[in-house]
Every structure is written in C-alpha cells, then in structure tokens.
Image (cartoon, rainbow, N blue to C red; front, side):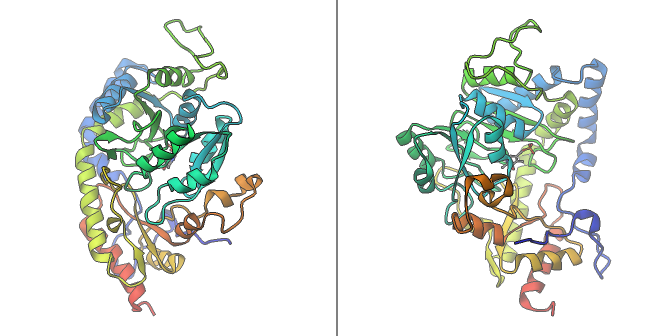
Length: 403
Ligand SMILES: *Cc1c(COP(=O)(O)O)cnc(C)c1O
C-alpha cells in the first residue's frame, strides 16, 4: 500500500494563529549556543591544515572513548560504513547470515549485504521496538553467524535475551547502536555489549555533526585493528604503502571511510554539552508523555514502556503509536507541525529484499509498528511551548474539534 508521508519541513506553513512552524529537527539554536567552542575547535583544524583523518579525529576518538568507556573508538564517515566495517572486522564471511529486526532503518540490513552477508529478518517485541529473542531463535539457521540487535528511539533492545540465544547458538552479537548515544546496560555503553557496535553522528542524531559521520566502538583489540585498516583502504602500520590483507583471510580490500576533521571538531564541542542535551531531551519527552498518555486515539507513549532490567532511557526519538496515523500527520502538518514516520515499511516488505520471499503477515509486530508509529519533534533546543503546541494539535485531532 502506498502511504502519504507527512509534509516535509519545506512545505510547512504557518497555521492560522500565525505561530511559527515547529520543524521536526533543527540545529540552528544549538549552533548559536555552542558557536564559541565550535569556532575555536574548527579554527584549530584550519590552522593545522590537515582536514581528513588528522589529529582532530584522534582527539575526538579519545574524548568519546572516555565518555563511553570504550577501549577503542574508530571514527568513520557514517554510521552505515561503521556497520559494514564492524561486520567485516567481527569476522563475517561471504554468505554468512545475520539476524536483524524487520523494523529498523534500512541501513541495518543493507550493511549486512554490503559486507557480503545475508540478512535474515526477525520480529520485534510485543511492547517496545527491539528484536524479539524468541523470534531470533525461530529464524536462525545453521548458516547464521551473527545477530544484530538495534537499539531504537529511547531504550536498548532485550540484550540479555539476545545474548542467551546467541550463546546457545554460537552467534556473535554485533550492535546497531547508531541511535543509542548515552544508552547503557548495567553501566556499559551500547555498542560494548557484544563484539562491537556503532554510533551515527548524522545531524539529527542525539550527537549530530554538520554532515555525515559515525564511529565504531569496541573493547576487542582485533576488531578495532581490523576496522582501523578497513576505513583507510586496508592500510595498516606506519608505512603508507602497507596493505597486509588484515587479520581475517577473507578480508583483502578496505574502503575510504575516514572521518574528516571539521566533523570531529564540531563533535568534540558538542560532546562537552551532551549530558545536558540528554537531560533536556528527557524533560521534553516526559512533558509529551504527561499530556498525551490519556488522549483517546493515542495507543502508546514511550514512557509507558519501561527499559529492560539494567537499562537506562535516553530519548533520541519521541515515538508514539496512534490510530489514523497518516490523517493525524496531515492535520499537524496543516498547523505547521512537522512529524516523521519511523519507519514506513518493514524491511521484509521492502522491494530491495523481495528476493528473500517474505509476505505481509510474516512479522506482525513489525508491520503493526510501521502502521501506527509517529515521531514527534524532539531536540535539545525545542521549547516547552513547542511541545505544548504539538500536544494541542494531537488532542484537537482526537477529540473531534477538527471536524
Ligand atoms: C542513523 C542510523 C543508521 C545509519 O547511520 P548513518 O550515519 O546515517 O549512516 C543505521 N542504523 C540506524 C538504526 C540508524 O538510526
């Protein structure tokens, strides 16, 4: 079924009241606030004159390693490339299967294909959006080598449940922790709960750059060493002309996945404010929940699904489930309020995975989430008044004043 997506930010109009539009996301206020630090960091990079893979990247990697507690941080050009590098560095061989959730951003599964593997889909939990360990157990085959839980929106997947299945079946756990900046299980940061994980610094993410950037996190020395070589054409060691084929015999060629120093400079400045930003996101998220949990037509609010035992909550996306999702999105759009649908189509029904032979109904929970989920504006510089406007719009829609 073709769905109409919410109006894009460019087409948002002011509503009748003349109030300014509420964009889904903007960093304008963040940059105004952080400009002195960002300018200082960027000036140092410009003065040094080395813009790719330089000292600024190394400095950011060290700072992020401290903040996350990771033994190794490998800065790269995107979360997606970090996933490809992670899968290869963790030992994926051509044709190996990797179990991934059917409800996630497409890069979770395309990274498996790019790394030479085969994605195998599993359903998500009854409540919340993490991969369901029972479904992992059901879809795994003797060719399955890895499982990749994804930590979506505001909490970790059921990592203990995933580990239990992985241990029993001899699978390596790699995490798509692209959204999971600040999420921790029993104090251990997301991405360090298995062989390794990733972070995305796409501008809209909790820690956003001014373009694309990402990182691989791991406590495993070999994974880190392999990923460092892979991000830089397979180079290793001090000489620029040494391509050892890395430590995994199936891995011969690397990529150009290097992080650039201007992104690292911006990220270093923003890392200093990250704890405050996360606290502000939590406040905004709680404000949404308080207003929306009792509204008829609102089926689920994030605060009502507790984290798994030992896990914390970090609000990256504020995602509610609603009746008449597309009509509500249009209603809000007409009032100048932008929303996003995360994610419109489950991956097992995407045309690029049609060859895997799935049909509607194969993963009911993933399909239901795709039909009902609506992400509301959430970023550290959003005003309380903006949250109230969004909530007014939703309340109006469901209480019938719209008619
Ligand atoms: C953002 C995201 C990615 C990809 O990160 P990029 O930096 O945009 O390449 C992968 N997986 C998930 C779940 C994401 O949200």
